[in-house]
Length: 91
Image (cartoon, rainbow, N blue to C red; front, side, top):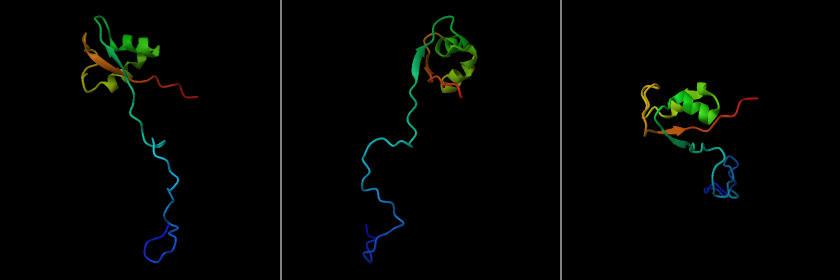
């Protein structure tokens, strides 16, 4: 690799000549959500218990759906909610 002016190698520039195209391991990936259609009698805590095993995780679902939900107590049959992946417990 040369700097183009005097033919000397430019040691300040990294050499990416062996890099293959493809997905970057450092780029954030798009989150993949499941979708759940609200049924009569559902609540966010009931849905959280179903997906996460813990009704107290309702806020995870609410936070992922603030584009369509303004009040966690007001969900309606037919609404399609994004269900984020379950986050494994920290060791």
